[in-house]
Length: 327
Image 1 (cartoon, rainbow, N blue to C red):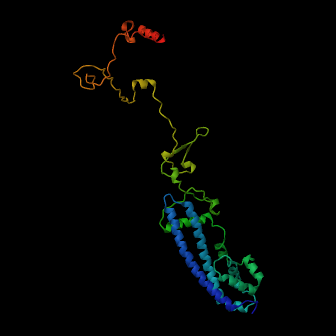
Image 2 (image 1 turned 45 degrees about the horizontal axis):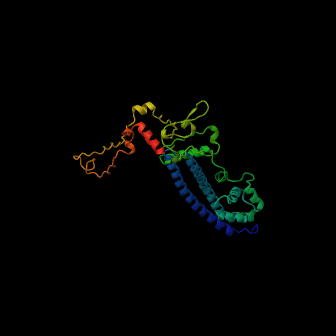
Image 3 (image 1 turned 45 degrees about the vertical axis):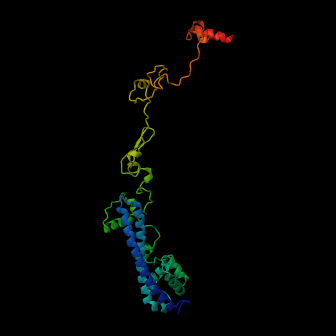
């Protein structure tokens, strides 16, 4: 009647469809939320607990839980508008008791995954004008449903709320866990701080993941020694602690001469062969008469060995032989 393009016959089916879609989406998100909570409980049940990852998963759980709550409220509002469709059709302006509901539906149309709300928004724009739509989007006069606005907010939840969710998840799944970091008064209202990896296991290849206490020695000025746990590195195995290399000293000359602790090496020294002999009682190969020995040179007393008195081994005989060769 009022507003070109507005049709009550088109608005009512879309409101009914939105009610069904909200119910289906809420059920899906509730089932997904239960699965995510079980995953958070598994993370906190590990040894050591993966607390930082569990906090991130808990934040996702809070967002899904808030979305389900907002869907249920929007579902009720759509159902009420479908029942009062005749009132909306016959009145030129929006009824005062329905301004908040209509404005909330318009505001939430871009923030939920329900496509029917876009069609509903267009019908309200055709009925009440673009100014009414702009006021609803900007929440002029604070007419929007505060719970829906809070649950569909893009701002991260407070750290205190994340802590409460973790504790309730552990209670539901019977997991014994205590937070490693307690929140102070200033941190409770602020969003969860960014993770810096205190709950991440040290890489296995580094050898620092063992549950063994060790000390890290540094060459800093003053001979400062830092304990591994105070540096946020967890426990350090004894094998990972640096140990100076002290090679053993070489054996001294006295040790080499006396033997010391060194083992004596067995060296094979062949025996000196016996000189040839003409003993007929020795077998062949031991210098007997039957050995194949070269024949002796004839001795006529004129050779160099028999000159100068025959002293072949004397120095004078060698000098005489050298002089004869020179001449």
